Image (cartoon, one colour):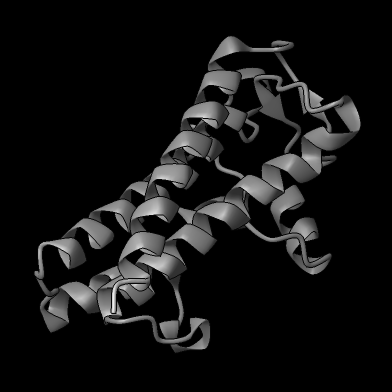
Length: 167
């Protein structure tokens, strides 16, 4: 989906060219509603999935469970890179959890990049070409998606930090 929406939306290409981390997501391939733009709520939910994955991996570590090599490879492909650049915490599960948290953070940073000049109001969509917010103004669903993602991030970071500090 990241590759699909990077190809689909010029704003994702422009942001990447300008070193803005993350990716904006739409509802589905070929969506034409109100111009078929990226949505704040779907993008925030992508971050939420990354954070939930991080929380899950931290929970595995807490229970002393290990990923199989196949599972580790699949999770690593989600973040799209070798996790060693983030440093070794205590296990590859915690290292990967940290990488997933950073991936979620990058998605949230891209949302912020497009809403900061609007005093962080959250509309329904972000124009696929210009990056300007559009469609429904101050959409409650956008706010709730961002706030829930932020709360799940906090829970994931707490779990990772607690486990990383256990000697």
